[in-house]
Image 1: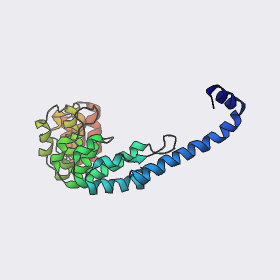
Image 2: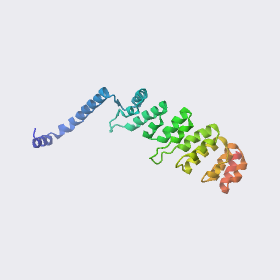
Image 3: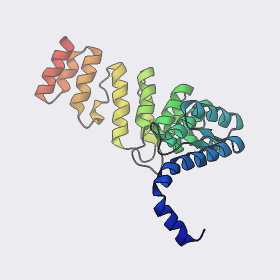
Length: 227
């Protein structure tokens, strides 16, 4: 049918076109899904599908399999990449390959989970995406071990790393204080009074309140220890 007559026909039958179009789109999409799931190993997006893909990826030692998710963008619920992200996180956790974490939605968080599950603090050094801001989780990662073991030496390891900002050191130190009540390193905090207050509460030692400069916080500290 020539182009001009085709447009003319569409104008005359626009109601029919509106009625039929959704069914045509649905049929095309189902054919697309059938083709990719049957012949190319894809899965239709779901939590279960993400898990199945992770198992296949682990078996074949190929994290790229996690990308084989089909999910219509018009669907309600989690986006396609959330399923891919879940698959990649499971792959990293099962294999210990934290390089895969760099392709997840939370690279630092992914590495931290693997470090915890494998009880390997050395992995914490990699809990950051080297090219993306806001992904640094090294303080929390080392802090987990410092908190659990009551050893500040885990936080000291942050000082040996390149481009380590003070915030990460503070995060680690405060996790250490949470479990030990040791105020020995509170001076590195940008607001040491907060640290001394927490140490006093955790250790139930009001003497630490004397290190606090702000009078209001000092009073709060003394009250919290007395409770």
